[in-house]
Length: 244
Image (cartoon, rainbow, N blue to C red; front, top):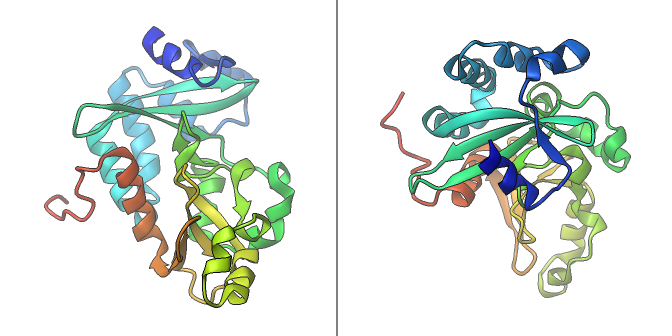
């Protein structure tokens, strides 16, 4: 625990690890049921089983992420930061490197980012359900990126200044698209996997880059899974199909 906490404190001195989470669940009825069931388990294996079973409900969206978790999830801890609780996922990759991902409480309302309320309503249900039932964001702890961005960090791409637009054809068309698009996955280096809230076929999203032309009409969840692996484990074969 000390090693984990020392790592977290490099980025946030306010965070603590809850060593006796059972009491927290008694005092906080708003915490998710699956959190309570997990941390009331008698063994770590049973705790992880409860959490992985919850993730499996979203296998249609997160198939490859789930497969990675089943193979590489080492532990899940309950953490607190200024009276806000999160789950800390501790994972290893194929090189034996450890990564820490934070999953916040599922959202109850949009007041944390009122600027995106209108666009949020138009997003596909398979995106919103993860925020509302699993986690309000799931990101690499040090950078708060490379995963599903929490509501407070979601951005309407059109509200930022993009110098690259001056170099692209159809800049006006792209600006209109950006005005109605939310960057759901930020790679920590100025690029986004985004959803156009008013796109007819919302199974597709697009990559928006700060320094080159966008890549349009990509399968959103397919690219979400792939981009996650680029960030956490370059050697992991996202498209391997040798396991059930």
